[in-house]
Amino acid sequence: MAAAGRLLPAVTLVWAFAFPSMVSSRRDVLKLGDADFDYLAIEHDTMLVKFYAPWCGHCKKLAPEFEKAATKLKGTVQLAKVDCTAHVGTCTRFGVTGYPTLKIFRNGRDWASYDGPRSAEGIYQYMNKQTGPDSVSLLTEEDLQIFIDHCDASIIGVFSGEEGSRLSEYLKAAGLLRDQFRFAHTTQKNLSSPYGLHSEGVLLFRPPRMSNQFEDSVVIFKDFLTISSLRRFIRDHIFGLCPHMTLENKDRLRVRDLLTVFYRLDYKHNPKGSNYWRNRVMKVATKYVGRGLTFSVANKKDFQSELEDDFGLGTSDSGDLPLVTIRTKLGHKYTMREEFTRDGQSLDRFLNDYFMDRLKRYIKSESVPEKHSGAVQVVVAELFDPIVNDPTKDVLIQFYSPSCPHCKKLQPVYTQLAKMLSADPTIVIAKMNAVDNDVPPGYDVQGYPTFYLVPSGRKDQPIRYEGGRELRDFLRFLRREANHSPYKQEL
Image 1: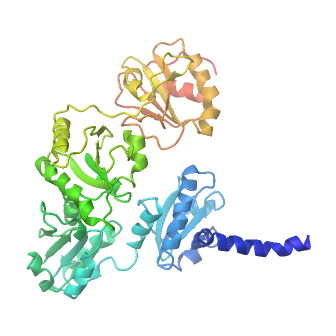
Image 2 (image 1 turned 120 degrees about the horizontal axis):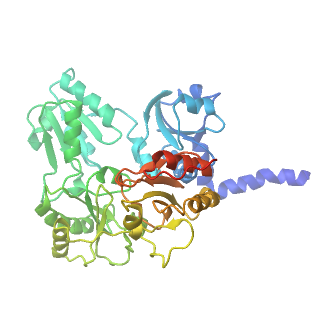
Image 3 (image 1 turned 90 degrees about the vertical axis):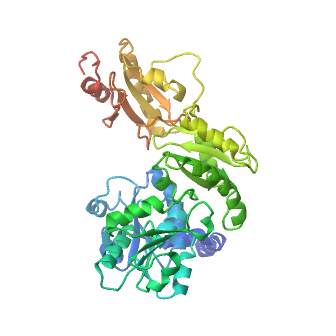
C-alpha cells in the first residue's frame, strides 16, 4: 500500500504532462462560492462569471468552451464559475433563475449580463473587447491606420476638444456598445480630412478585407449626436451590402430576412479567392437593395452542421461552388437547388423566384407515418398544419427529443392522458420529435419536453404549458385553457 501511495504523485505528474491544456484550462477558471465571492471578485477589473448547475445539459455543453476561453484570456480577463446547487445565496443575490447564466463583473460589481456567443472563440472575442478604455484616443495618422487595420469595423469620433458635450455623449455610447463594436476618438481634425470629414462627426470604417467597388469603405455620420442616433447609424451601416457572417455575429445578422452564400471562404489564407465569390454576390445584390432582404457570405466549414441539419445540404454537394440559402426572421427557409453560375444568373433567377413567391419552403421533416397507431397522435413537420392547426380542435402537443430521459419518464402519463381523452373528437393529444423535424415559428423550444396547447379558433396564439407533470395537472390545464373543456372527472 505504501508503494502504491508513493506512485500517485508520479502518475499525476505524467497525466499533467500528457494533457497540459486540460490541466491549465481547469485551473484558469476560478471557483467562487458564498464565502469568498466578494473578496475574490473585487481583485479583478473585469471578470466573467458562469452560474451553473452540475446536472444542467446546457452547462455541460458550455463547460469545455468556457475553459478554453479562460486559458486564452488568462492575464486579461478572469473567468470564474459558481455552482448554484452548492452556493444558493450567491446565485439568489445576483438574480440567477436559469442555467447557465453568465454575468460580467467589474471590480466585484455586477456590471452587465453576458449575451455574447457561447463558443471559446466567441467568448474570447467578446470579452477581449471589455478590456482597456471604452474608446481609444488617436493622436497620429499611424495610430489611426493601426486601429482601422482590423478584421472588424472601426468607429472613430472626431471632435474639436476634450471637453465638448459631443465627445462626452460619444464616450457614453462607447461604454454601452463596446461589447459589440470598436471605438476610437481624436481631436486632431487633420486625421479625418482625407476621408471627407472636415468638422466634428463620426467615421465608420468597414474592415479593409471587405473593400469592394459596390459601396464606400468609409461612411460619415454628421447628424446630431446622441447615444440613440449613433447606435442607429452603426446598426444601419456596420455590415454594408454583404458582410462576412461568422458564428459570432450570426445572431445580429439574422434579425432580418437573410440570404447567405456559403463557400470555402478564408480571409486569413485566401482573401483574393474569398472576395471572388463575394463580388459576384454583391453584383447581383445591388439589384435588390431596399426590398427587405439582406445578404451575407460565410465559410461552409463553419456552418457545416447547420447546412446539413437545417437545410438538408451536404457541404460537399456543390464541390467548390457556393451553396445559397435564405432564412427569414419568421424562420422560413429556402435553398437554391440550381448550381451557382459564375455569371451570377442562377442567383438572380433564385432571387426573382423568391420575390415572386414561387419558391417552395424547405421543411425538415421525418417521413409521414403510414397509419396512426397509439393513443398519442404522432406529428411530423409536413403534417403540422393539417393536424395541429385544425381550426376545429384543441391540440396539446409535446415537443420532445428521442434521447431525453425526462421525455421517456413522462411517456406513461402522457399516454394515459391521451387514452382518457380519446373519446372526445375535439381534443388531440400529440407529440413531435423536435430534433428531426422543424419546429414551426411561434414555438419556443429550448429544452425537452416542451408543451403547447393550440386552442381551436386561436391557432395563432399557442399557450405554453409550464405546470406539473402528473395526469391531474394536465387535465386541470386543459379544463382551464381549452375551448372544448374535457369532461369533468373526479380526481
